[in-house]
Image (cartoon, rainbow, N blue to C red; front, side):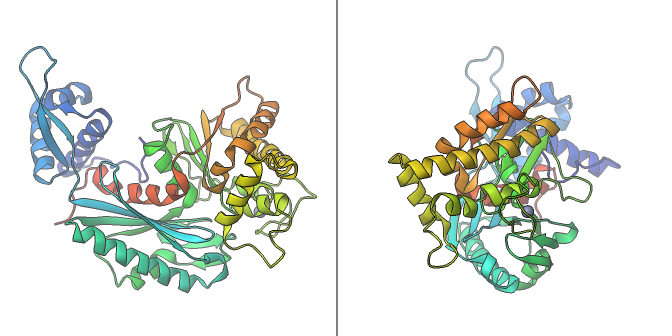
Length: 404
Ligand SMILES: [Zn+2]
């Protein structure tokens, strides 16, 4: 389990209760169905405390009872599972060519996933905020129409994210000093739920750690696979943010001094060699005949078709991109020693042709005897939005009761 926010520090009795509530919710999330006695036995909380907390959590519909145990010695016990049906978290994702919104409930069920084609890198930030607000309003209408309350909204951005939801720099979007959280709150006319902003990579690794094929892995990296290449890193079970929250910019590590110019203005960055736009340029030389590509999916589909057909130019190009990817991942492997690095976004679709060369390069450049695993994400291209919805539920998971 990783937390977006630092765990609450108990200072008085109500804080202790918040912390204990979080302990009970976490235990049920990881071990459901489980009984009150199981919770007491495994968390160290006494039975009376567990009983009182569970009663409160059932009243607030964060837990529900599912019936009795059958295969157990002694008195049958009532089993508990997460409920959370009356609540939803929302996550938004600003992609290279689309906006995505996901709503999820506390049990991790996706309530909706909506996409809207949108060329964020080519329009002013205000226009993107306007489109995000419109998408959010539709999602809120749907979710509240189902009788659910929205607990929060978190937006994932391909770039640096500072405090208070300010985006100081997002080269992939051409943004500088955009007060995203404040602008979005204003566009939503101060909604009754918190609006947060995080990097797309941090939210994607949160989704990966909770819902992906390697869920629960304590040392896990998710590499976003758009035009930007961010690393969301969980190290020792904690999200690695760095001193100012700017960690994870593996995409701007320079690998080739003679390489192509990157969106950041430097040359030969990992993103300039392995970003989806770079891959298209490398393997489909005709793709930019009519101007820069702004809609990536059709071009990725074309690459997939050619790769399946065994096209030599495409296979050679993808292997070359794979080697650069493995070189980049080896830097992560040598620095932070993850167990698994998961590649997401558009690159996940190309993984069967990228990863064999990437793994060979990774292995050759990693000092440790066994290189980390390098795999494709199974979460699809909405991982950041799913992570955003998950993050928006974090206050409840941290033991704060929903307002109202
Ligand atoms: Zn760069």
